[in-house]
Length: 142
Image (tube, rainbow, N blue to C red; front, top):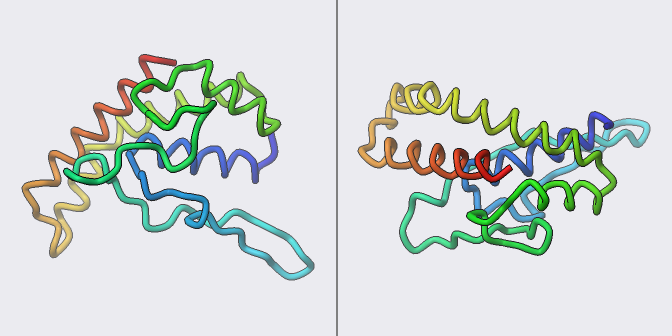
């Protein structure tokens, strides 16, 4: 799988895992370099909307026809891979690896935000738990 495709897949998976329901197509950017080279920009301005009441919980892009992250299964990820010309096995491994990494680093991310000057917020722990819960469910359903 090309580096560019892997980067786009990783961005999509990461946004779904953290519950960034604002990650619509306009939030992905391609950097055009000298000579016409193109590269996906790093993920920027990610936010977890799943812990906030009144914010849409559906995915901004459908995965195998579903916008409900609670019912995403391994077959959905493999179908997505086939639709966009990626390896289903590699896609499945990337979802698992990124999900495991999100769970592993959620506590460190919470601590890093909490250490920021304006980072101490009682809602922060709720956001972390919401992300961990969603990611765990997606991993179980692979």
